[in-house]
Every structure is written in C-alpha cells, then in structure tokens.
Image (cartoon, rainbow, N blue to C red; front, side):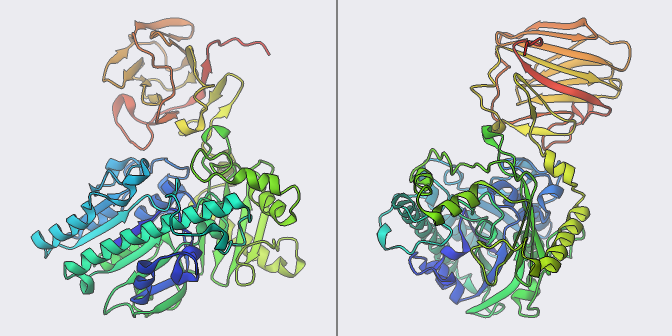
Length: 586
C-alpha cells in the first residue's frame, strides 16, 4: 500500500479534476488507471490536525490535536501500530507533522525532504524513497509494506515559476484577479508540477519493482491551498481534496465516485485492506467496499473543523461544519465578530499578494466581496454545493432553506454531542487568557509557543502563581516550554529542569496553599508557599524565555507520566504567569 500525500493542494487544481492550466500528467495517469473521488474532504484545513485525524481515525477533539502543531492525547492508538500488528512494515518518507512523534512508530526515511526549508530539499533529491522501494522488494519481497510519501509540496514557499505565463492563466473565482495574485498562482502551479514529478518517480519505482499489480496506490492532499478562503478555513476550497486510488484487478480503471468520504477514513481503510478486523470506536469508516464497487455511497454526512492557528495574533476564530451527501454545507462560526487573520495577511514568504487585494477592494466590488468574505464571518453559513461550488451565496437568511438549515443545525449538534465537545469548550479553545503583563492557563489546558509574541513576552523576572489543593496527591503544576517542570507532590514543591537537574523543598505541612515562584533571567530562583520561602537556588541560567514547545497547567503535553510529573491529581486554581512585577498599577 502506497499513499502519496501532497501538502496544501485544492482538488480543483489537478488536471483530471478539470484544471486545464496546471500540468499533472502523473496524477492524471493514476486517475486513468483507477478511481477518482469527487467528494473527498479533509477533517481540518491545516496540517497537524488533518494528518493526526488521518493517522488515528479520530476527529481532532477525540485525538486531541485541534490546533496546528499540537500533540495527540497520550497513548492514542494509530495507523503504524495497527498495521505493524498485522505484519506490515510501515514507512513514512518526508514530512510527518504529527506529535509526539515517538507515539507514531513509523519507520522514517527522507528526513531531509521532510524539513520545511530550504525548498530545494523538498523533492527528495537523494532519491531515498525510490531507493527504499527497490531495496525492500529486493530484500524483503514477501513482507507487506505500507509506504506514506509526504513531500512539502505544494506548500508555501512555492517554487519559482518557470513554466507558466501568469497572464494566460484562468483565475479561479474565489481569488482576486490582480497581477500579484496571478504571479502567486503561477508559482503554486509550478509547485504542483514538482509534486507531480515526484509522484511519477514513486509510481515508476513501484513498476520497476514489478509490484504495480500488487499495490494499492492512493494519491491525496491534506487540505486546500494557502490562498484566502481555502487553507485555514472550512470553506470547500479548504477542505475538498483530491483522492485517487489505483488498485489493478480490484478498482476499475477510469472510474469516478461521488461517495462522500473523509480523510478520517484513511486508517480504517488501510487496516481493512491489510486484513485487519473492523476497529470499534473510530470516527472513520473503511472505503473498501466503495473501492470494490460494492457500494456507491459512503457517509450520509461528514464533519470538519478549524480551531485556527493563533500565532501571536491571538487569532482564535473556530468553526465547526457538516457537509451532507445531498450537497449542502453548513458552517457555524463561534467568534464572528473577530477578524480572521492568518499567514496569508502578512506572509513572510515569496509571492506576497495580499496587499494588492486590499488596495483593489477600494474600487472593485468583487474583490471587496472576496476580501470581506475572507476576513469576517457570519455566525452561520449554508451553501448548496451543487449550484454554488464557490460558496458565494449564503442561504441562511433565505426562508426557502429554513428546513434544510434546521436539519443541518441539528446534525451538527448531534455530532458535537457524540464527540463530547460543547459550545463553551469551542469558544474558550486552548489559548491562554491574556492580560496586560500576565496570562493564565486553565487546568488540563495548554498553549503553544506559537501563541506568543516572543518579543513582548520576554520577562526579566518570571512569576508563577497559583492556589494548589491536594498537594499530598498532586503532580505536575506546569511545564514551562520544556525549560522546567514545576510540581507539587507528596507535600513537596519541586522543579525538574530540562537537563535532568531536580530541586525539591522540604516536607510542607497541609495539603493546600498559595504558591509564588519568582525566577530571574540571571537564574535566581525563590519559591514561596503561603508567604513562607521554601526553596532558594542560583540556577546560573536563563529559564524565563519562551522557546519551542508548550506551557501547560496540570499536565505534560502529549505525555502521561507517573509520580511527580503525573497529571495533577487535585485542583489548581488561577495558574498565572506574570512578567517582571506582581503589583502593577493601571
């Protein structure tokens, strides 16, 4: 089984899906020899949540990875674990983007082209994937293999355009027609062509190994392209992806399917094809009978979401959505008054075009509409994909569609209830609560370093304060970006540093109290409980700065540890991180 997983590719931007400008001969050849899915959707329109759902068979709330670059919940079962039990070699070549990676026991190759930069490395220049295919079938011809090839294309930054005249391209309706946008579109198409060439190399390697007729070959993308109202959003352009499956002798060549499918179906499908038993409790369902033409339909509806990636814009604008098999798309936006902002607005990458949209919108009504559609959301949206694939006509306020609106509202509520996610949970999300010079983290929550402007949150003195109950049971109070882990356990307060150094107080009477930790950028540490100093140490290093990782309350992100660093067994109230001075005047 081979899965070629492209990065940020709209379904409409592949030749066999009707794009006459882009050059995708290998994708088109794969479709001619297999089945092309017209209604395949990502679970989320950003990399980590989408891939985590693919490799676990669980929706983001259930697997834990809702924000970009977040981990799945500790010990979440996943695809390589399932397939290894069935005797498969499970290899991923290139990009992984699931966390913690050790929880996903892939055999990894091609780590060079699995890195974000430089873009020249993105095409497996060392040909590690092709070589591995030849070596596997030469040395282990009887061992079944599942190979996932995951290059960083056509993800931004795009390859410089060589093959296209931007002025001659047909501009998609959802993009503003400016000179800069055309230039960007040409670079995006160039990157799609590079992905297609790499796909061709993998297809040829399978053929040379004599395994074409013995291989289920799947081509997909993780979500839509990084253009306004595509990636990061739950609009059709953000979620609808190409899916093509070639399986000689099993899947009829040159066929298409209108079955409604989701990338959350990937894990149960591969396990089914590998001969495994149906796994209970997954959100996805096997596509095997659709592939074998024993079924025409699959899901009655699919669910998707975005919790947005905040970075330091604190741009938390979550949406939840359902798409029905009769072509209706319902979206619920939880913070409609907040401007929607992503990398696209201030992209520090090549082919920047967004300023031209802003300028052109002053005099062009269509571009003004497209800009407003991207930047602001209505509380609810309803679209008929059969008549309005661009999703320009919101039917929420059209009385003709009242019954359909109510039907899909109830359907989304039913799905959220099944998942166990409430409106309050969605509205709060995983961001800290920010104040002028401080922020709080709720218990069992965490925040990524991407949520912080590190120039602003750059303390000379860091204070950590909280009221702790149940310190006799206790556990980890917080992980501070892997600089140190603060714990309260068996009536002692302690820190465990990243280098393994451990500091611990004497036994403390009582089970609760007000904690105040003070740590300077020079490494001077003082810990008080109920105003009594219990720990003093000169660490001689700066542990106050935010670095890659997470800040947590009552847990270790993506891990379930024991003893001092167990998830906090008790209550942590008002965990707050403050810069420089606990007493601040308004």
